[in-house]
Length: 146
Image (tube, rainbow, N blue to C red; front, side, top):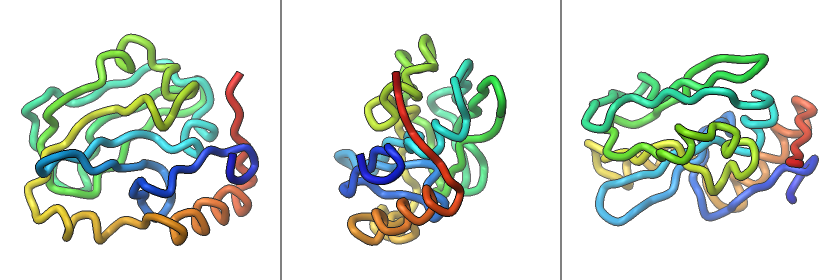
């Protein structure tokens, strides 16, 4: 655990609010998932809706919607992409995002811009760890999975 009981993976890429993580896959593919901070804020996740594979999503248009007992909102998207895969296990059991936020990915995205250019908009490594901790402390976010 890294801060306030929240898990962190320095090898992943994060948006500047630490809502989502991205993992680079072979080819121009990114896997997207929710951070531990996001799942803690959302509470028990009840439903996940992901756009169909083959759907193109420009940057700024969400790839999915998450619903919990206290919140409903988009999974933000920061790259021009096409959804190429959906995690069927998460679709069937949305609470996997609470139980294992870094193992339970949401979707895989084929990126339609140079991947290095797309990833340059995200933070990774020790810089991400510093920002992640700051967000957990600033917003008093405490993570935990039973």
